[in-house]
Image (tube, rainbow, N blue to C red; front, side):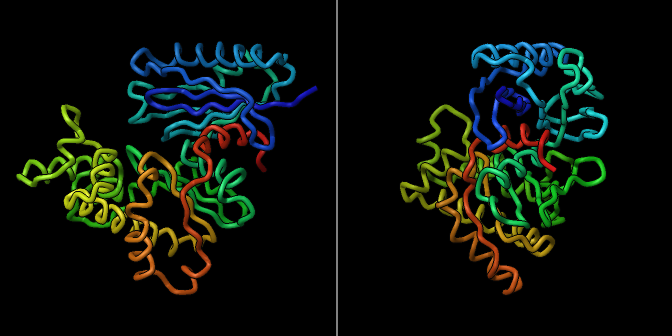
Amino acid sequence: MMKVYCAIDLGGTKMNIGIMTKNGEVLEHIKIPTFVEKGPKQAIKRMKNTIYELLEKLGLKEESLKGIGIGSPGPLDSEKGIIIKSANLKGWENVEIVKSLAEDFENIPIKLENDGNAAALGEYLFGFGKGSKNFVYITVSTGVGGGAIIDGKLQKGGNSNAFEVGHTIISLNGPKCNCGNYGCLEAYASGTAIGRIAREKLSEGRESLISKIAGEDCVKAEHVFEAAKEGDALAIEIVENEGYYLGIGIYNIIALYNPEKISIGGGVSNGLELFYDKMIETINSMSLKPNIEICNIKKAHRDDCGLVGAGALVFYK
């Protein structure tokens, strides 16, 4: 009988639910809306229905399912299987997601983990991190997050909320972050920050292709990247800024963890070639030479590392 694992990558907008093998092969997956505003009960019910749908689609019986792993925005209590509260899941408080899924899937191991940690695990086992002992994954998107595997062990922290790299403070006089603090890395180097900085510069009267590319849409990071590729001066300035601040964040990670490999994922990584040189220049100018010499930094190899990492939670030791 074929052994498979269910992976659930839970997000504020959508859920990606898949069936995978132990070697990281996703046999089938379905993305469905989360409908956060309608509450957790409906979302969990649709999770269950989607799992059954996937098994049926693959011609597999429930007995083939050897575990369910969930990557979720935090904070959460992974040991008790509870989503405590999350800015991305507004209105969801103390949701006993593992207990709720266990009502249908009895005697099947179910694991809950912070989505950044799950993605780090996926990229470590099945992506760029494969073969290393000390690995860090950074996701740069709406926010900045990720996870770390040190000496082959996922660094979860006291309650699975370790490695909140986006909320490390790089300037006390910096812009206000969504977390309420000032000068967080996320407030400088996220996709959200790139869009905000571009809008601020444009409102000051700076001329740029960014406005033309965005049109009637709100200016976002992808508009800035497109303009930078066209040689737009303001866009290039903003992109260089991204490389500089992300470089500071990565320097701090290298100083703390001394990893052999770092991979960068998330939507902003699609523009990595535009700010990679500035990022590396910044890291090299700050880091201890022995540390940077053994550290390889690249774009994440798995776009679905959050999904496969969630599934791997069940069998990863």
